[in-house]
Every structure is written in C-alpha cells, then in structure tokens.
Length: 303
Image 1 (cartoon, helix red, strand yellow):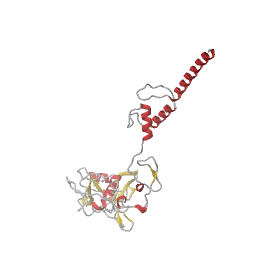
Image 2 (cartoon, rainbow, N blue to C red):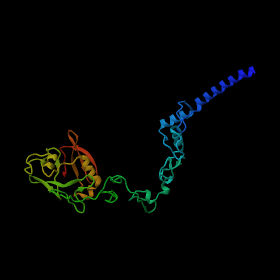
Image 3 (cartoon, rainbow, N blue to C red):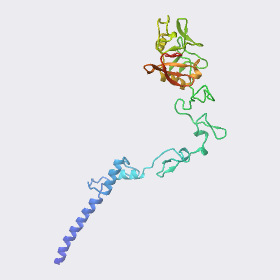
Image 4 (cartoon, one colour):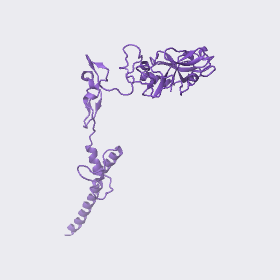
C-alpha cells in the first residue's frame, strides 16, 4: 500500500507536466476561446502568412474558426483568377489563371486570328487583323509621304476647321487646322510680301530663327523692325505663337501631312537646342534636328 501511495503522486506529476508540454507546442485559439498566447507551429505558420499578406481573418464558407484558422484556411484555399488562356500567352512564358497549377503559353504564328492581330495588319495568306490599336498612333510610319504609308494605316486623326476661326487658320479641305488630340489650331504659312509679313495658303518665305536673315529684316508690318521667328508669329495677333518642338512632332504624329497645306517643309520651333541652335521639325516625315539659328526655314504658327 505504501508503494501505491508513492507512485500515484509521481504519475500525476508526469501527466500534468506532459499536458503542459503538449499545450505549449500545440495549443491555439479556437472559435471564441481565449488566445492561449503559446508559441506553436500553428502560430508560427499564421505569423508567416500575415507577413506575406495572404489570407484573411474573416469568416468563410466553413464558418468562423477564429482569426488564426480563418487566415490559414483562406490562404490555403486561395486560387489566382484571370482571363488569359494558353492561346493568349507566348510559348516561352508561363502563367496562372483560375488554377494554382502553372500553365505554359501556346501563342505563336500558327494560331493567329483576326482578333489578335492589330487592325490594318495582314498575316497568313490574305487575312487582316481586327484587334484595336492602343495609344494615339502606334503604327505611325517614319515617312508618311513615302512608300505604302496612307492616312488609314498611319492612324491619322480626323482634323476639322476650328469652330471659332480667325485670320490665318489653315483650312485645308478635307482636313483642317484643328488637331483633336492637342486641341491646337495651326496656321497657314508665313509669307513676306515686300516689307509686310502675313499668312498665305499657297506660298511661303524662309526666315531665320534669329533676326539675322535678310527676310527677317526691313519689315514694316504688322510690327516694324528686324523680327525673330518667335516675334513674327506673335506679331500676327489672335494669340498666334511659334510652336514648340514637341508640339510640331505631335502634329506630325496626329496627321499633319494629311491635314495641313504644304507640310513638306522644315519648320522652326520655339525650342532652343543650344545657344546657337534651335530645333526644326519636318511635318511630312517627323524628322527633327537642331540647326544654327541663322539658317532659313519655314514658319507656321499655332494657337
């Protein structure tokens, strides 16, 4: 009997100690029970999922198992969604779509259809793509006025006449002076007749950027004196000004070749390249370069 009395307390201590050790390793909050505060494999997993930003503590289709188990289960059951298919992804790329299994793309020249080729582009034997283009003009040809470039395949915008016209507007038909992308109205060419500078729909005069050229000198109207390119546009009133380099380049992209009279010239911009140079843009090719300010080029104003 004495041995039994000694062994019983020992067993009780062992069982309690084992339960405490077991609780320290495995215990977690469940349902509305209080948080044990113990650090376990489950808690370590939960902390890792939180750090990764996965899962949610909200209840799910399984009910509300508490913040730990809700996050662990929701993270485990998450599936990436998407609308891509193997035919949409290049053959050397992998992706996930409505599955946690990686898929390999199968997009190549053998499975092209009109819907996945840009409109205006031909492929195969005689099919033409119908996929809409992105951006204002992604297929712009380098030389609009050369080779097979047309107004259609260069994404030119539809220019119209400014609804509030002023003297000098370039109203070329069937185009116009009003660029719908930038909202700018472009003028006709500047022409010097005797000592007067004004707009002309058919002829033009070459001026220097500074006032050094003979055509910039001896002017009597609309403002008298030796006038720079910037001044010659401003002198015309109605908020006319010399366009910047980027404004000229954008006009080319939007279809200046098809909408402005005599675009096959280099035009001075108001943008300086160096102290002795300024930028010139050719509205028929988009070519731009910095030229010495004493060189003579055409002038076209914008408002």
